[in-house]
Length: 83
Image (cartoon, rainbow, N blue to C red; front, side, top):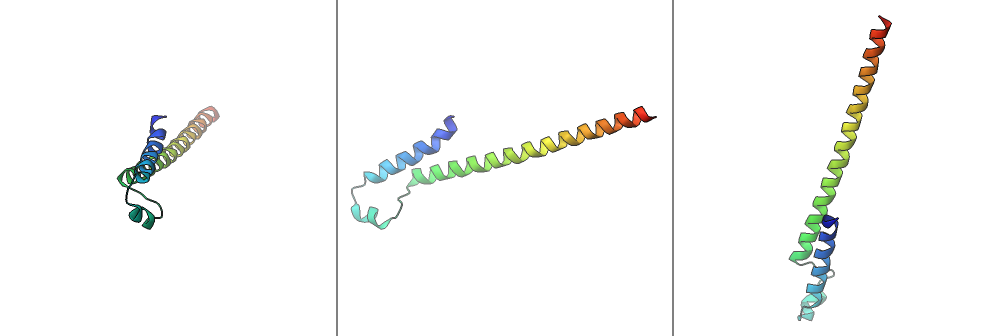
């Protein structure tokens, strides 16, 4: 829960910081002002995305291995019963 709120807080801080800039010329030249806080929010968000994708992939691989082990165990038991 906390990790999902961190990027939101970072983006909100970046928007608030950019809104308080006194230099209107610099702010008008940028379409979307991203400061160091905004960059940090993007990095944290991408890190979370990559972590989630890796966990999802690993979970799928582990499930497939478990299914394969169950099938091998059932086949072994059937072979023993046939003998």
